[in-house]
Each structure stands twice: as structure tokens, then as C-alpha cells.
View (tube, one colour):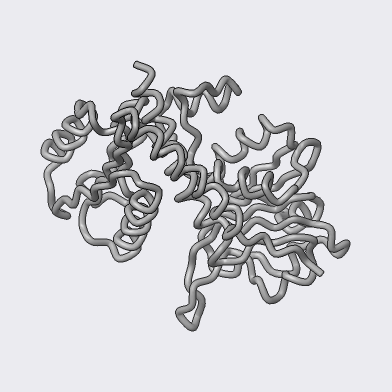
Length: 288
């Protein structure tokens, strides 16, 4: 029977620790504060930002959603980011994607100061990840960090394993490949131009899908040996409008050794990682 990698128990344990850390920081007059910049009213973005705010407040941190008009000018948008960067009481800032057309050309990763880049997209944070020289003042991208934490807490062996990641985005695929490589996995990064994808995915120990295509990974991508670990990063809707992942769970569940569900798998770990990064930024402020 497959091991279902629910994140609830891991999240509960980490949340308890984060609450204690936040309380300790407040006792030293450091009040962890996150600002989430939201442009427009994209339905999915509204849900994501609300969930981030709810969790931050649950652990005792401050979180403000800075809601901006969908038609905001580039200069006004950049002015808002500059104000947040210069606010010494704000520890972390994230820019919720996607941005509207007039802002879509901006390099979001470079907009937020490295010290407040709790999303882990700043070039200096990415370089620290690539060079495997991560220090307390560097932040790892939230979803990759959450995936690693979930696997480690679930006793999934990573070192020496062949990991196939399907999806090469800067948000998940590429930083995750570096993070797992740093943890001694052998990583193959696949994408839309990869040939013989099924042959590659069948011959790995851990398969991670982050492509945003509902139920794309079915039984034809899975090894017949029933020994693979499947990590599903996808957040999609199926033909009935129900939330689902990139993996066709019903067709794959009994063919693997372990699998993450959607919902209840990777998603909550992303928000947990964001909160971890925020408190780390607050501790860095304490040490100034």
C-alpha cells in the first residue's frame, strides 16, 4: 500500500515551533512583519494571499496585503516597492504573481531587497543556492524548500537517488533542481521539449511534477516496479471543476511507494516555508 505524504502533521509540528519563535522575537521587541503586494483581483491570487495572511497571523506575525489597482502605472508600482524596501519595520516582502500586462516585463526577483526577499527569488539568494553556500541571510524559494522539508520529515531518502523534475520554472523546477542536487540527488530536469519523457520518468526513484497540467502524469509515466515516490506540485481543476494536481491520483496511487495528495500535500508546505523565511528575516534584523 502506498504511503500518502500528507503535510498536515508536518505543518502542525513546524507551526508549533514557529509560534514559539515568534513569541520570543516579540519579547525582544521584534515584531515579524510581511507585506504582500497584490495588483488587481485575480481570483487565485486573492485566495493565495489570504491564505498567507491567515497563516502568518496564526503564528503571531503581522501580515498586510498591499492591494493595488490593476491599472497602476509602473512608476507608482515601483514607488510602492521602494517604500516597503526602506521600511525598517518590514522584514519580508513578496510580490504576488501574475502581474498585469503593463508590469509583466519587470524582473520581480530583483525588485525586493535581498534581506526582505522571503520568496527566495533575488539573484544573490539564487546564486547562494546554486553555489551551495546558503547562510542565515539567504532564503530558499518557498515551494522547493517546502518539498524538501516534506520529504525529509517523511523519511524519504534523497541522497544518491535519481530525481526527475517535470517543469523548469524559476519558481519551482530550476531552484528545486539545485536544492536537491545540493542534497546529493542526481537530478534530471525535463520540460515541454524533452523527448521520450515517459521513458525518463519510468526510470527514476523520485518523480516531481510542476507543470500546471491537470492529471497529466498517469500510469503510463510510472515504473511497473511500484517503487517510486511521486511529488505533485500542481494546483489545477479537473473537468468537473474539482481541485486536482498534475498527477492522475486515482490511476497512480496504487502503483507507487509514496505520493503527495492534492490538496493537502505540497501546497501547505509552501506557506510554512514562507513563514520560516519571514522569521529568519526577523532574526537577522535582531542581529543588526
